[in-house]
Image (cartoon, rainbow, N blue to C red; front, side):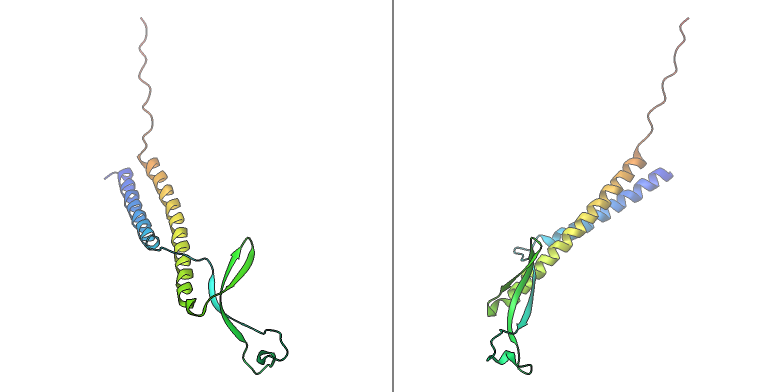
Amino acid sequence: MTPRADRASRLRLALKSLLADSQRQLDEMLPLRQLVKGSVYELKTRCGKPSCHCASEEEPLHSSTVLSWSEHGKTRLRTLPPGERVRFQQLTEDYRRFRQARTALVKLQRRMLATIDQLEKTLRLPPPKPAARRRKS
């Protein structure tokens, strides 16, 4: 096998591998049906009332489950109903998985384009030499 053909063969194999990686990323993304951007966590605060139990250093703070997300450069908080923590944790985790798969796909696409360009360069032949001119007698 010539060096050119060997290089083209390796590039084809690399493209097939990148395509398989792309398919795996799509398989990760496509089953996701609902996404929520943000993070779910337990927020502990003092209410500010001097007669409340939270005003004392020894007593527990008020606690609520919140969803936090960024919108137009500002952090937003939304209190979640008591039974929704697990559901929203899953939805936010699905969002992170979706975004990670998207990022991986973008990187794979760039690598695929670079490999395709290399393959084209490897396969491209130079133009033919000009035909010999006939002399007029």
